Image 1: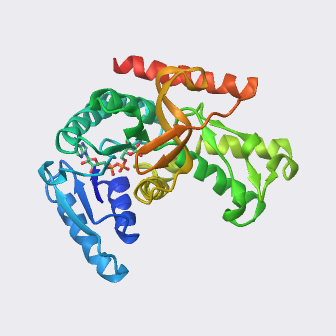
Image 2: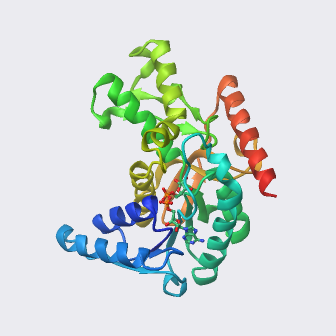
Length: 306
Ligand code: APR
């Protein structure tokens, strides 16, 4: 397994480190436009692998040649949010970066699976998918894994139970109109509606929607990266170990959940081929309405791209 990570910033370098720590690949390539940074961070991670007893090799570069024949390429290149910015404010700068990165990846690794991480996530996944000319199972956006992790963490904090007991899922766009599904949020199989009053559940859902912004505000200069990197690593693990794992990810829809020609977060099964299938969930009218609203928001972003 060979994994390329584009962007050696906070998210990219942290994901590289996690992938190396867990020895999820033979080779990891970290690439960035800034000279020295991917090389320096890779050397640092390589040396940490000596302590972790990981045999994964990691190399830093500013050009794509040594990325050739990667099995997975993760795009984290772009600018992050600053306080007061929405993910959507990043679109013009990041679209160009994501499209150029996609073209380079495709040129050197025509059979890889692309994981898109750069924000605004759904529009960037769409841009990468369209410009890759890959089948849709090989271009997957990292959004719902992170949003779901945030929701699970907040339920965990609220109830003071083991994270292993918690199941949850968040669908829709990776933005303010994301759709956390209360119906599918359980603790040891018990619906959270049996464990928490409505106003507390509403507060947790709202905190999940603002989960990224809360961290942007606290950091003051940049956005979250530990949980995004852990989310990337979980997706990489599902692919390289062919786990057939069901997780919420952003993929190109062709009529599923009532939408077409758009990339949105839905439950999918992931394995060595990338997305194996979209898992159909019958949404309630209220959930479908929230999902449609989220789709409208993403569609207006995609229109800005075009
Ligand atoms: N090719 C490769 N790397 C690039 C390019 C490019 N064309 N353009 C920018 N970069 C690099 C920058 O040099 C920087 O090292 O992308 C990196 C981005 O890192 P950070 O600024 O630390 O941003 P980060 O927190 O990692 O977020 C990256 O992920 O979660 C999203 O919203 C976030 O869109 C943002 C992305």
